[in-house]
Length: 184
Image (tube, rainbow, N blue to C red; front, top):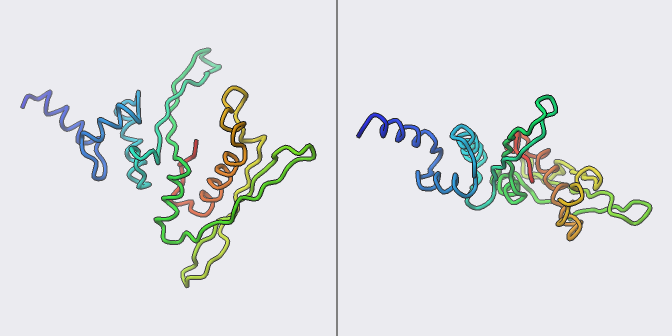
C-alpha cells in the first residue's frame, strides 16, 4: 500500500464513529450529508454517535445553507445539525425515564387564528413516580416560516406547531441528552 493510500485509509477510518462501516459513512456523505467537508462530516457523525441517532433512518440531519454576511457583502455557508421530532422521541424513550406526554393544547387569538400550542412532558422519578418534567410552549408568530417556505405550516398548522412545542418540552426535560441538537 502506498503512503497516499495509507493516508486516505487512516483518514477514512478516523471518520467512522460507533459501529458504522466505511460504506455507511460514504452513503451518508452522498445522501444525507451532501456537501460536507471531512471535518463537517466528523462533527455530524460525532453528534449522531453521541445522541445515538441514525442518519440513515432520518432521525438526524446535516444541513448546509447559504447565509448572507452583511460585513462581507456575500453569502457564507453555514452548517446545521438537526434532529427530526422522531429523533427527539427516540432519545427520550431510550433514557428509561420518559413517562409520556399530554395531548397538545392549542389556543387561538381574538381573530380565531392559531396562536400557540402547549405540550406537557412527564418523567419517572427514581422511585418510579410519574411527574410533570417540562412544558413546551410554541407561539405561531415565532415559529411559522416566512411566506414561501410555509407550505406545510399552512397545510397542517396544528401538526407543525405541536411538533415545535413537543421538541421544546423534550429539550427541557432531557437537556443532557438533547443539548446542542435542534429540530427542523
